[in-house]
Image (cartoon, rainbow, N blue to C red; front, side, top):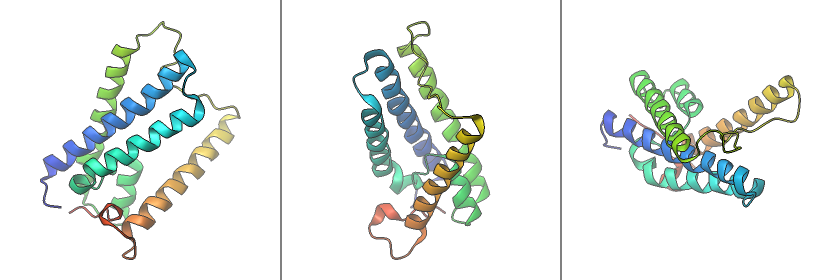
Length: 159
């Protein structure tokens, strides 16, 4: 990857913007229309991740999540300066998308602003989130760092 740090950070911001806009937007639309359901919302998230990996992977490695950036930092696949800029860019992308959604779906229209509500206790919810995040990190790091992984999208090294 020959992109500058600014280009890589911008790619992260754009990728996260569209991830949050489309994914959380799908939740908001479903809350108002009941048209998508859980499968539809999951499909939107999956497809937007695929699209953003395809669009930004060659520029920034398409981390699109601070946990991924931290994992790559811990594996020395990204330097500290880049990791910090990625974190700021991811925050800016998510915040900008949230502001866009708040304009498109004003409060008071009976929507919970894309919130998901766990059905279990706080402890169950934290444990489930930890397990699912660990699974996500395992898959991403395994695919992106294993030399046997096939295809240019599988390699997430950024220098």
